[in-house]
Image 1 (spheres, rainbow, N blue to C red):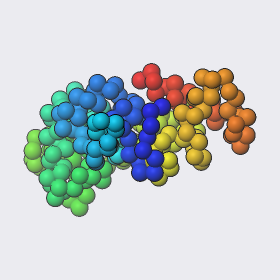
Image 2 (tube, rainbow, N blue to C red):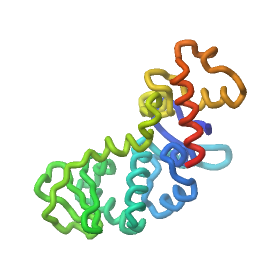
Image 3 (cartoon, helix red, strand yellow):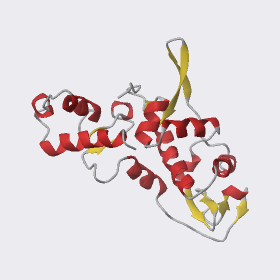
Image 4 (cartoon, rainbow, N blue to C red):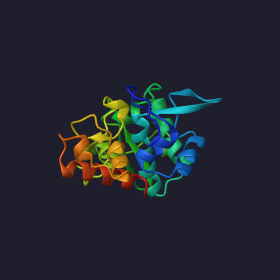
Length: 209
């Protein structure tokens, strides 16, 4: 797996696309449409590379969910811009907002405004609907499908590198060992067969999305 900037929970574009399970071409298109905003640019050889955060992984999952509902990138950007504006320019306000699809509209309920859901994709129109889905928890579960119960992604562990749950062992290391016919259980005797197989299956899953 390509290098991740350890210790900061930051990801290169290709790694962000890989872990968030979208095609790199889609990532590029969404970035060009200003749906994604890098936190800074990192020098890489003679050029600079954009760097994204763990929250961008979740944002990608949200965008993908809305795209699957047939919303255009323009409509999604309108909704995200409305959240940003109504939250006094908080770039992370969407992470604490309630966001659902209602009657072909993207509806947002902002924290601190429990009686005022906003039809964000239509501007700041008030709608008479209240929703309470747990958005962030759902998006985090999407990053790692339930069948990978031994895998976790935590921005505070190895900079958000996918690891075997409860350890600091990257799943990519396990996969590389399998590819080289090395038994991971010999290198990591504290692990069991289910853990290493699950980690390897997760890595194989990423490259097939």
